[in-house]
Image (cartoon, rainbow, N blue to C red):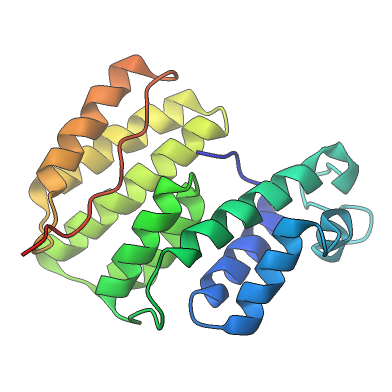
Length: 199
């Protein structure tokens, strides 16, 4: 996983990534940011929630956030390139997008893709989606240096994946792989996101 940006630019970049799933102009904007054609420092300054703060947490664009913004944009762009077009707007498309983003090291964006589907789901599917979200956010916490938060969310997420179900996805195997990383944190290797099993 790649560490996130501070709150406001993190959310702005995630919104751009989600828009890029279905919007060619957003995809081009993401590419311009990733390539450096769009100045990441200026982009961060545009993310200002209030005067004097480029990031919303007291840090400034000069603190090295520009390189991180470019890296996250680059990884998102590469992840989106592997997805079929047009992307299915339903749960199947969201799971494919979440998998590509998660495996690109973008746990926060994977969480953002899945959250609307989790909110409208019920039963075993809701449990499974919440587990996937918790695992994505858990590994994101790990990348951000929050080891305690990572352990807690990975444990809870794995438990939900063991109880949940999404037809065709190997959630229990993913839960086992996630649990195996917990004792090895922070050096554990993140397992790949589950994909639908071929028919």
